Image 1 (cartoon, rainbow, N blue to C red):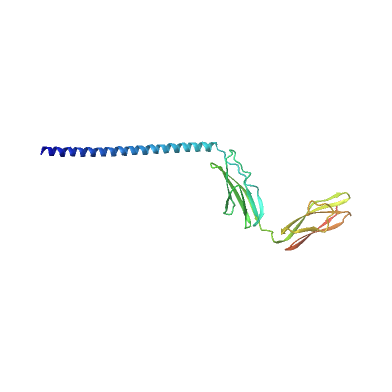
Image 2 (cartoon, rainbow, N blue to C red; image 1 turned 90 degrees about the vertical axis):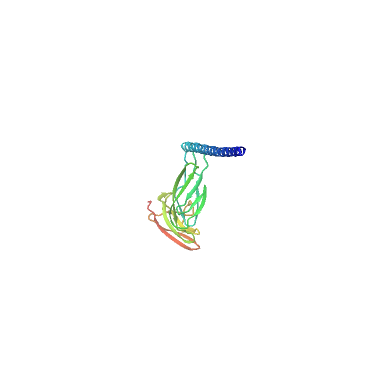
Length: 236
């Protein structure tokens, strides 16, 4: 009987010891896991701090890009305009990325893009260049007018030189500004000199108070335009 009681007591002690060991091991494991988590958290915080300090240092040392979007321009509807950022530079020599705001709720990406504007209006085209740490912007005004393609010509005449006296003649030089498309052929009813191009006519008047009516004619497949200007010899 005593042996049986002793055996049970021993078994009970062993069970209690095992239970205590299990509890202690579980506690130790929990402590080790918490210490590991705290160590990992401290390591992540330290790395983040280092990255933040490095970024702040780069931001202090980095120079923003110098952006050149281009000069103000005027185009016709549905004609192609080339937007170029080649004049943009970065003082640090960093590679740049380019984004264009076309001013009509469209955007385009790249150092050079080709776009068309279907509607008449005034637009602000903005180029944004970024080196990854800083960005800069530049804009230009774009005026889009109605296309002159497939239209009859129009002519405006302007005296660009004269009257002046040259080798006994009273000289006028007249320029013709022509619009229309396809581009019209232009000719004058008189040209006494050697014009700079086929839009300039020279008229030499020999007699005092002599008058001459210069006529410019422009033609294309959609029509013809005629414009006149009267020139008077006032050089004598």
